[in-house]
Length: 321
Length: 113
Image 1 (cartoon, rainbow over the protein chains, first blue to last red):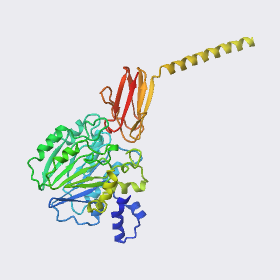
Image 2 (image 1 turned 30 degrees about the vertical axis):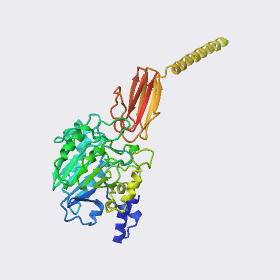
Image 3 (image 1 turned 45 degrees about the vertical axis):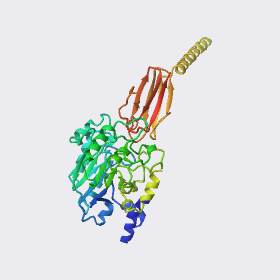
Image 4 (image 1 turned 180 degrees about the vertical axis):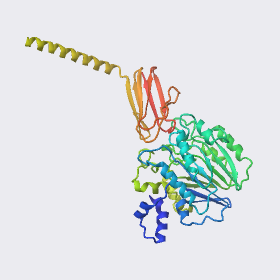
């Protein structure tokens, strides 16, 4: 995958004698991981593996980490050890040169909404240095009970089906829920109640306030044929038009992507559990089986070069066809 | 004595054949079990036409859980993990569209005559 290139090049520059094959074979990095650094209202992201090698993230106002799609309970061929890969992700977070202040989990915490699956994730995340985790649900977290259990565990202070906002270091964070009440043939849905809440939530904010929106299903049309988009995301984004800096963080598609549209930057994170195919690259978006020795490297790719703009256009081209 | 035995055997064989035919005829005129496969994020066949009284069984062959939910709230499965099944018996003629509530792009239809 071309997304590997920044990491590969880094190794080449280090002149450590590790070729591409050796690099992929020995690379221990697994799990999603993007470190986000806010500087003067501009959000920059770095892949964790890059940061570990010393990319400067100092002088920032705020840093946090996004993890996604841990799918605890999944045990099929695409990754029989989702516990192990989540633990490696936590190790990577703890090894960061700039300690993140908190984590965002963008959903599909569990695979089947089983209590023990949530328990396991909670226990593993306790091992992470940042103690606060802000969750939004994935569709796998709200199976069978329309999210009752999820709300009891993670949404005590949330509104409606689990949406909420908070402010920190001058930035406004908005967690949205787009995995409930899905209609036949449709995409993710925010719904009228949530949109009304959002409108009110941002009404009094200054235009210069950096906005970070996080939700499970992408809030942009990544690949509607596979349901990778949200029906009413345009309405949500129109409510955020007045802001100079909006960053949208999503999961769900188990691969990293970025798109920049005006003042809005969209990111999707990799999964800590298993990869999914690029849009349209397979018959279905089911778990992608890769050779065991490659799994961790594919889970771990959160490519910094998207942010630097090297491949940004290419990503947009391939994903929005 | 020997001739007697073989006649008897012929009668038994004919009786068994008739029974077999009766069973086959019954199965043909009244199909009461239909299977729908859930595979690669789709229902196959997407549309099935059945007689009233038929039970349709969905089996999930994917590595990802799915549901079978009637668009008109007539039936609703629990979440089906890999190899799990859901059955519903259709007693009233009509058209029953359904979808996977987790992956709503997955849709199908049962037509009951």
